[in-house]
Amino acid sequence: MYKKVGERMKIHINLKKTEDKSYDILIDSIKQINIPTKALIVTNPKVAGLHLNYLLPKLQAKELYIATLPDGEEYKTLKYVEFLLDRMFEHRLDRKSVLVAFGGGVIGDITGFTASIYQRGIEFIQIPTTLLSQVDASVGGKTGINNRFGKNLVGAFWQPKAVYIDPFFLSTLPKREFLAGIAEIIKMAVMFDREFFEWLETHRLDDTEKIKYAIKRSVELKAKVVAQDEKEKGLRASLNYGHTFAHVIENETEYKKFLHGEAVAIGMVMANRLAQKKGLLTPQEANRVLKLLKEYGLPTCYEVKDPVKFYEQFFLDKKTQESKIKFVLPKGIGDFVITADIKKDEVIEVLEEFKRC
Ligand code: NAD
Ligand code: GLY
Image 1 (cartoon, rainbow, N blue to C red):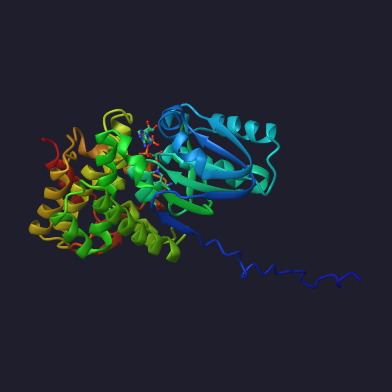
Image 2 (cartoon, rainbow, N blue to C red):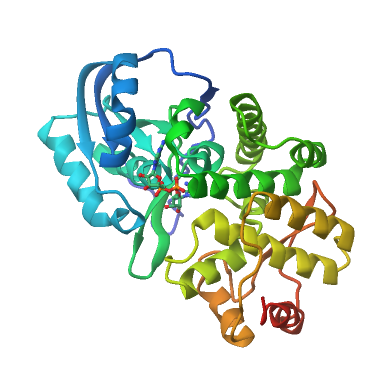
């Protein structure tokens, strides 16, 4: 019954046959969404006021509830996760119930995270309503919340069951929010797809068909990356192009001056300067990216008052591993390198260039 004393007791659990987490992303007017169980829509007053009347007739569930969070990044916190959990328990949601994230990236992130912990994890659906969440945040299963130590530091990889991207919602999006989403589209093109970048150079995103194509291409590119590296062990870090710089800019300006996409636009220009220094990008290529960002009125410069202080803030980023900063740099247009092999002096030299804007 018992193994002999001294014999090693080792039991191996084989989890190789993991569940299939694949899902579909539909880019079109929402026709019908049928949820055979209880469902709770999570949204905010702005999105609900503008678009709930459009969504509700298209969404059938066994029982349907709505929870409304205040609008804003500052509410993407544990306190509001608890608020949602309370609503879920009050409505007796069970393990087969479904959450529906209906809003921008803030709603998507907090809803996905809450779904990941309710009764050890239930399904959720993404219905993103901003361009940024349609091309990036709703796809790939990164969910999370902020705390006093920083943004998105608490979270889970929890894939949605489906994503419904309906460009109709974008008709009410403030222009500035729309343009911030374009920065993420440009990011995808510079990293992965030269032809798409050339298409963006020659097509202005000013009608639904072109916007739909740009969303489709961005999501295809992101889906391909996520399918290969769901948990960001390597390749997925390429989606952080511009973000290493952007996070410092957002921190220094206390998340008040720039939208995330705007900070990413500046971050891409900074990364491009570094790429030029390393001989990865020609001045002509860097200018093409700069020109495209400028055409959409995105900011491309940020006054770095103290380059050394700016540099030190890279180490606060959760992606900075073992004191090594990983830079995602374009290698020409449509390709990239991820490197931790960049000297502090080289980065400081780039930051010095941004002392005056
Ligand atoms: P957001 O969710 O705050 O939305 C921006 C504003 O637009 C809000 O005021 C919102 O109420 C409003 N809005 C939403 N849809 C609208 C519509 N159709 N018409 C009019 N107004 C509308 O911001 P966001 O840019 O969508 O997302 C940013 C968040 O996404 C951040 O929290 C960021 O960390 C997160 N994010 C997550 C991922 C990921 O992979 N999970 C990727 C990128 C960003
Ligand atoms: N937005 C970065 C990622 O999904 O990995």
